[in-house]
Length: 326
Image 1 (cartoon, rainbow, N blue to C red):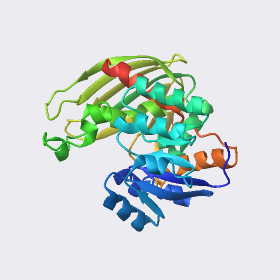
Image 2: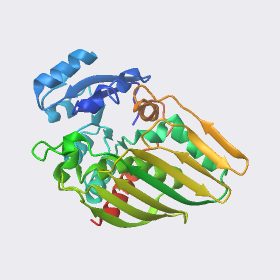
Image 3: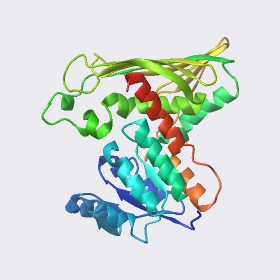
Image 4: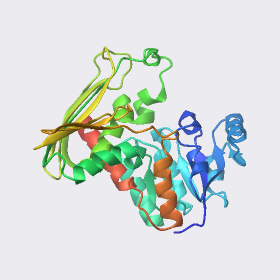
């Protein structure tokens, strides 16, 4: 499957597409955003007019089957990821789906199987895999700057946001029927996925998930332990009703450690017996753009393999399911 230029359609042109992802499809070489869809037609029309997109739809099937749409980016809540992925695959078109890939590992497997059967690629929007700061961490690991990796520790907690306290008007991210879980599925998925990218697949995982405060039904605290296929151990702590915001990952080796955040823009820090080194990176204006660039190059030039696939995205869902005990 090779294109001269990839003409994209977006299903679900909500907030994430305004700056994080949508403009990337227009700025990457040999890429063009030609159609958008939202269930409320007026909102789809408004988005199209503001972003210079020639077509808009209020029906996903119409966008998927538009002959002028080559590939589809699914930016809806996870509850509809499988449905739209299967329809896009049936139409013979590449799929780029938001994270988390689906509500659970079983849905992910159905999506992977459908795309394989249709002979179309499946990509997942774990865009950190293509960003400079995380590629620097991988480079440091590949160069054995900290010796043999022993374990990784992730600590992420934050204050409860005001929008989670209104049980009558909860955001979809806190409704398991729409998202698969709570903020753990929405946010921790990024951390677990980037650890998969840096350290390889996790083969064993277990943990505890609870709701301590009761603002909503989904979990608000999760602790987990895991072991990578390489033998490296990992521990993670996530709490969404704490007194401050903390975002810290540490990869510990026999000769040093690498510290970095998942969501912040603080420096990547290497600590060894020789002291500390730091690397700072400017946050991309459109955070999806480096990953979208790898997808477009793969689809148009046949070079450069996108680092975030259906298989890798499914692994992250498997780990989350194992940690929360599903």
